[in-house]
Length: 197
Length: 71
Image 1 (cartoon, rainbow over the protein chains, first blue to last red):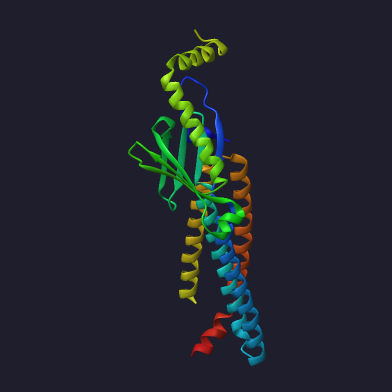
Image 2: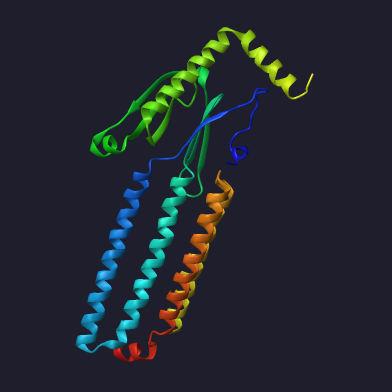
């Protein structure tokens, strides 16, 4: 994965990526189901219209019906890719140093925000309803001390595990701040390993 | 018929712009290059097929007979 597009490591220590998250597949599937139902309805209407026109003798209109059907199929195909792009470009990345939220809002708006673990105040996971319970997905809210206020992982799989991971990394960050010698040693070990003085 | 041709041309331009927007976003913002490439290939190939089918149906519309029906 090409994380260089969104991660610019400002730290001299190696930044490890623990998780790259998208919204749960059911979130995507539920939107596609509507398109499939729409296309099935259009196909049924086409068959019915062609049969009716054939019986009534107005066969000049049959190519028009086929044209309109293919037109709607094309629109539905392009729209389904709009949905896919919106789903695929919403990413949450959990690294050893921070949490990165990349949110695609429509096509011409993209929001990227970072959260340092030291600013995390509270983490809550939420699973609501039958569908979310069955498929084990939900929301994770990260309360921060920064300007962002609340960081949200929306409709992600295994929200409780994500909450546990973020809390663990938060405690690690607090521990490092309390013991800066550990951080210095880590930087020195990293420099020695890469042949730097 | 000129009106229909103009409308179809406008529709084709809109489809082309929509396709460019989708491909641009997939190729520029995807973290996973392989997934981006495969989805782009699938999208472009299916879109081309659908556009060609649509064009074929448009060409086969008997505009002269429809104008007679209208009048």
